Image (cartoon, rainbow, N blue to C red; front, top):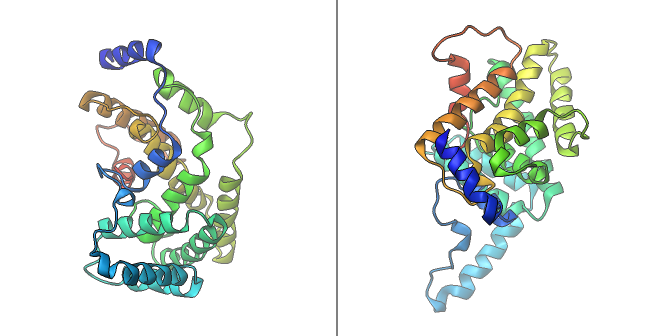
Length: 270
């Protein structure tokens, strides 16, 4: 608490160090990387540069083919050596590649999500989107972060209070991206005959609160140019856990650790 108060007082005279969108996106897409891979130049001999650049243009053309891209992602997913970390990294590279074509990016996400729903309906639909273990789950996190950047309100000295005001306010219109995505989940539930309201609620909770708001609460450095201490990280983790618990409709038993919540927290990007 003392560290947070000290940080607040330091900001009174200097102002709020908001990150520009480019820095925000890089920290969301590539958490833990000191240097974004996007800022690296092509380290190739000059004699091969033209050939490599032509190859990159051809790759870009392939990525703009929906059939190729969806098949490419599915092929990667079935490789046993393709780890969750690899999936997240590839998803973020694809996000950067498709960033300027948000409508196409959204269409790809929708197609991959439909495939994911089909997989989980056959197993346990309540577990869908709980973690970030597939390319589509990381793509969803990135897509939410792009679409909701403008809704990340308030100042650092009132970070938590202002953030919850933005999250819980009923006076603000629902972001179109959120309505679109929630309508898509409702359509999938109807298509697969899922009538359990708890399952649909879990899907939506694992999409917006877990993949966007929890990520921001736990990682203020994604939005602000600040570094937090271990003590502040611990406080923010408790707040994030409490918020996630409040979004569930199941009865909670008080205890030292919430098993479901712990699993959900493990699924966020940091």
